[in-house]
Image (cartoon, rainbow, N blue to C red; front, side, top):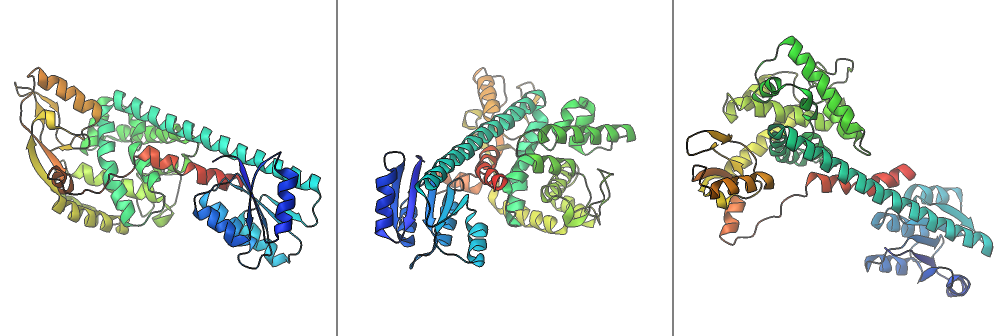
Length: 415
């Protein structure tokens, strides 16, 4: 968006006077009436500052400023009016989130100062948005790289479960899917400080000793604090902290007595998905889900129902396919272990294929070090794509989804 100013009024003489007075100082456009302003918005025009009269016969200033905010949250909104009652002023403030309220007649000096201050506010909001975007994207990407290099099994498991967690959240119409996405990715961040033996026990669902359990919970809190240092990720950090909290309020963190729906929604989703996945090491999917349902007080029943519905749909959509390693694609899941020609397991089943893993396997395969063919799990939609059938696009990555909320959050902070 260029730093344009839109002036909206239903009096042509007023608009002409604005243009004559300020066209040399500012990049100004005008709209004769509220509907003309809405037409400009609909055509894709965006503005740094919108100044609107309140009383107009077609569309009033409240709607103009509200619409300006809905299409560009950082647009600075100024109201200029000759008459208004208290109710109208409250409506504008609540619906339009105005930056400044000016009354007619307004001196040229006051009006020009308002325009300059509006542009400065817009530049401030945009600078904050860009800074937050770069910081958030860079910080999340850095954590992902650290986790993928230091603990590839933890990272791979989190990546694999992220899709299931997102699907469950979508079924329950959760409005901030990115929080579930990122919280699931970093839910085991604290495990980086644990010994490999404890991490293996956690991932396999094996029972931990009292000392090991204390260390595990302590390091999850450390992971939560680490994520919480990233701007705008405090809700994610809280979700990570409460991921082992039972629905009835028991479980860590013991200092908190929250229960039921007071537990962060992403935490309730992670609790169900994590425990379900651990049970799959010794139970079938049906028995694992039944076990969760019979564990009274531990899980959110709505999340369990959403998981059951998702698993039912997935059962009809995922098939095993035998391929050569050169045919591997990112986001495929291994249905069987990949082994060397001597039978040594190099990548276990249920591993999600990342780009790095694909390239490493491809390099090993070219040297005839691996046993082929291999078996992978694919969605029927992906299988149909090979035949030329249309496929729905993949969901946005977690980082992109989180970044998409930065503009909205920065606006709420400044309002």
